[in-house]
Length: 326
Ligand code: SF4
Ligand code: MG
Image 1 (tube, protein in one colour):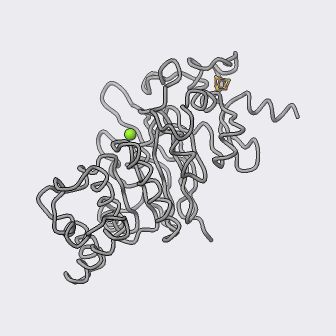
Image 2 (cartoon, rainbow, N blue to C red):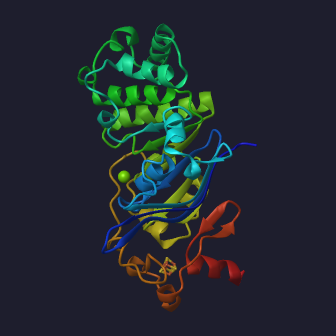
Image 3 (spheres, rainbow, N blue to C red):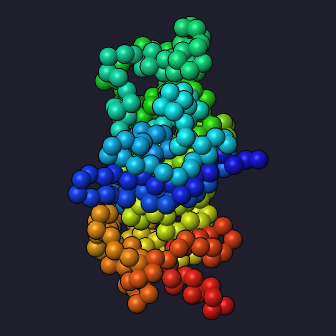
């Protein structure tokens, strides 16, 4: 079966003496092999916390709380020990960070850093690992890769650094790639190239890709399916065409209305108002303060994410009423 990732009721909270911030609150979604799922929303909606939870970069410690299940290739990541996770991260799960410099070490050559992945995870011999590194640099389109492999991060342009990070993520031959805003720091032309590259690599390797972005233009371009997050929850989920042509949730509609023309790749203009303080949340719909359609029930009853069409879910009382009235 082609289910790769099955996240169920994931919760990631940050707590202090005064308050608990529910950064990710009861998130459920799936990802298939070879599928690119876009996780989209404004900054602070919990997208990055979701990736950190899945990679177990946050856990159950004094100030962090993690709950739920995340079955990856049938095994629950949330139940893995830190040691088991170290083997999975960078190996079966590749991670591409927003800022490539957070993944690149300035004092080792790019080639050595990529070679370290198969050396560490597959116990590859040094020369074997080096040839894997060269192959990966070639794969991500770095020309003159034999020379480049011997260079350091500061000798690479921004786009080349991001390619090097992708090469590093691929060197473990992952079945899941998690990319957190992988193009945000890059200029428009390079952004497009990096996105093309990710699609090409998905086609070649059939890896599943979880792409975190605030940019619906990016989603339209590369994703198969999209989950819209708001205040730590998924408020709408659908295949990309369905979401763009039949958005149901008022938040999604707002995002789409504020989206610049596809292809212009300008930053998304946020819809009016601000997300709720995640430590001051009251009952009812989390979007009520900003929603032009809010009515009485929205104040008291939280709308559950529910099916409104095949493969399409929305968490809004109005989309449920629409359905019921037919
Ligand atoms: Fe707006 Fe109410 Fe729907 Fe929430 S449930 S999005 S407040 S109409
Ligand atoms: Mg983020």
